[in-house]
Amino acid sequence: MSPQHTPAHTTYDIVIVGGAIMGASAAWFLSRNPDFDGRILVIERDPTYRDTSTMHTTSCIRQQFSTDLNVRISQFGADFIKNLRRHMGDDPRVPELSIRNFGYMYLADTPEFSETLRHNHNIQRAAGAATQLMSADDIRAAYPFYNVDDILLGSLNTVDEGYFDSGAVFDWLRRQSREAGVEYLHGEVTGMTLNAAGTKVTSVTLSDGQTISCGQVLNASGPRAALTARMAGIDIPIEPRKRYSWIFKAETPLDRDLPLTIDPSGVHVRENGGGTYQAGGHSDYDPAVEPDDFGMDHSLWQDHIWPVLATRIPQFEAIKVTSEWTGHYAMNTLDHNAVLGPHDHVDNFFFLNGFSGHGLQQAPAMGRGIAEIMLYGAYRTLDLGAFSWDRIPAGEPIVEHAII
Image 1 (cartoon, helix red, strand yellow):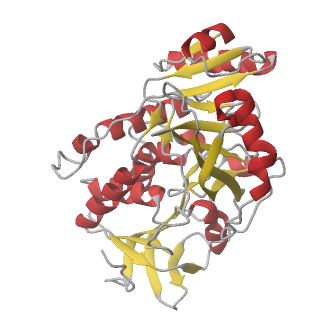
Image 2 (image 1 turned 45 degrees about the horizontal axis):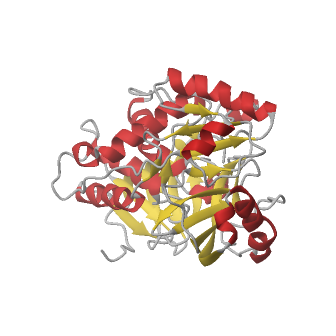
């Protein structure tokens, strides 16, 4: 479908700034709600989505978080993926998807991190996740390719943890919402006008000068979230942080699936299929960057990533990089968790921001939740109130230990 450059109307009930996975999920849940018959406009600056976090993702989902709420958010995400056609009204065009359950493997090399894994395991199991703790000997027996001489404990779950076709989910969220009347506009929001009291956004202005009136505004602009919020006079602690990825081919492929392995160093690597693998990481110096800065740190692979991989999995001593790229985390510097719901003063400005690397898997639950609070002023399924704006000015973080 060719990009739309001019909106069909001058006024919309809801304007969503950002059309990647979060904006698309919100638009889909809003448009599917039988209690809403208003107009929705999604404004996306790049309809190719080439540089979005959505396109740079590892396309994986996990249950291994340290808070019950984050576990339950991903459980709904897994259900949404595995039952996509049912969620989308049994539309026969929608593909039947599954999760390739190679699992996540957290490796601990200190007593302190081991205790964190035990703590997380208790929370995950209480929420119904199938996480299991593994000694170094257990890991050797199940995955003999690992070098675990320095490892004290591992945590693994192979149920609803692994790869899924995020592109199909994203495509169908957009396709069905368009068919329900949601407009996707190719444009860039460069300004917002507030009422005299500063309590409501009355319109958004695009870079080409178009002005669009709105009833509510949803900030779903990923790593650009702070720039969007600033147009409404709001400061939010979300920064673009570079995350680097490499696809490589092993001279001697592993003889079984490789879980998405989180090394104690922070480097992670997963199965990619066909004797290829995907690794990711970042440098120790991790500053905020401009949202259009996708420059690659070419020394990082040779100096840090590859040595870690070859030490942890000796068969990865002989590998060849076939592609590499830089993406961005929309990093919430307060607590690495989402900011969701309305602002306390500009009350028609809503946040769907700050997912810090786990947004793709959380998109179904977060899209459903933001639709509920925008339409009803309250959550009706899963209570996501812990992610509200109020904790930001109060400086009260949600402590989540399982951040990658």
